[in-house]
Image (tube, rainbow, N blue to C red):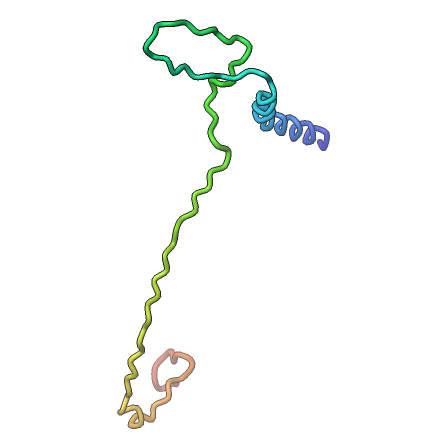
Length: 105
């Protein structure tokens, strides 16, 4: 099972890296693809049979667009409210809820 996994991993790595390797080897070959800028004349171009790499559209592999954040600092002013009637109430709430009729509590 490990051998099959290793073969699958190697094959998938080759499949992923092969287009990049072909594109990289294309840099060192001594031919170029020139664009025709003479549109006024009718003329024919030599057809390149050996290289079809320029027909593929290459998108960037990784494109990073970082969002721009702006921070707005809002200052909160706390209004102090005084409860003047707090001292009139001697009731202390219990830390648990009473359940059942009041006669059992």
